[in-house]
Amino acid sequence: MPDTPTPRITPLLPSNWDATVHDAASAFPASRDFVLNNWQTGDARGMNGLGAILNHPALAKAFLTFNNHVAMANSLPKRTCELLILRISWLRRSEYEFQQHVILGLRAGLTAEEIERIQAGSDAAGWSELDASLLCAVDDLASDAYVNQHTWDTLSRHLNQEQLIDLVFTVGCYEVLAMAFKSFAVPFEHSLEPMSPEVRTRMLAVSLSN
Image 1 (cartoon, rainbow, N blue to C red):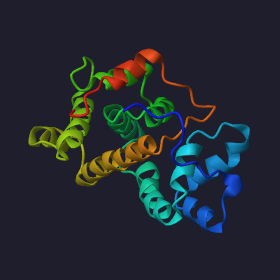
Image 2: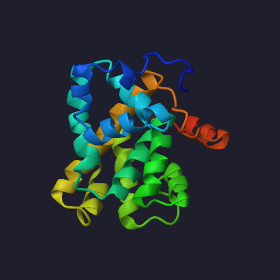
Image 3: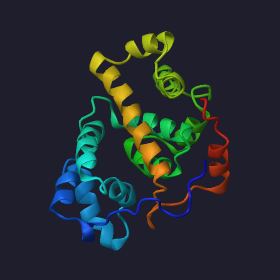
Image 4: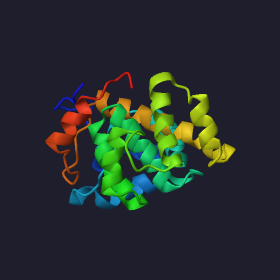
């Protein structure tokens, strides 16, 4: 389903944060500080996604504690995390999440060509065994909430037990965020580049049964 143009839940911006909201946002300090330092200039990417969640401070504090681990204390390398996040956001057709993580993925070491290949999945030519298996794991989780045995065995040659656990929870974290961003119709910030019509058409053609 394409994102609706009008927010269903209006993002709560820092000018309207009270002490309870500020405390909730503080569960993810890096996100809080980025928004507080940049929102007035219009460069606070992610501000609207965070602001939508902060309309429910108790839930936001609990979820952002989890999100903070996934984003900041993950045992997986940043590049790996971004590959996982981009794939699940692509499968869930979450344009807002995908565009945010194109920027973060490039910073983490993914190339523009790799980000394009993520859209095609593990069958695209050029992936290493590990990267292809990571993409397969996301597809498995999205379709069946289960990493199949062949994929698990391949991943286990490259990742330790803690990393395998983080992999599943990373995908799950951003699956939940994709649901939230789409269902709340979170609007793009002015500083977030829209998805090109060609890429958006490809995204909207993705089968939700993948």
